[in-house]
Image (cartoon, rainbow, N blue to C red):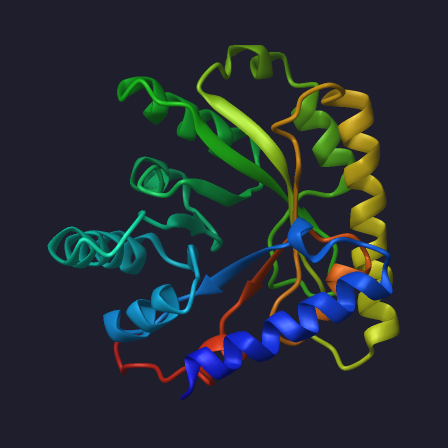
Length: 244
């Protein structure tokens, strides 16, 4: 597992994908997905320049974040990374999700309300993305377009003073049919631009379109993604412990 070489390869591919779309590669943020990865892997990625880490589970990500912060403090290695919660968040775990700097997976007004309630308790503003359902897979979470509008127009939204909606996230169908995957990304990008114009015009913080994973991220960049979530492309295939 040569993390540095993998990151260098990703950066070359990132530049090429962005330029194919007439974009600046600097517009795209790389989130290294560290699910099941040991501290040493995170350290190697950090030394190679990674400053965004993503976790799928609150239970794993919380302790890992603390462990990494301890390592940074002891070594004086540099600025702390930004931590992303990219996995599904249960309502009862909304408080624990506040350990992360950006929550990608808000898919209901109920979850948004729970996050806001917990944020009020600690006097914080929590950055969130609205997760959209764009795949042809029932196992994936997310809002439909109708549900998105219902959420944005919900009467409780004006009470969410401790929430900042910074953009949208989506997961495409896991498929080798890149033409179909690209259509899903294109559809989400179009909706993102429409929502930005209709509901967040002039709000500079609404600037994140999180789409693209290790198997499809180059197509996502070409279709307008501003944030990609890569695990295998950086760390190699995951190994799972028996209790995971």
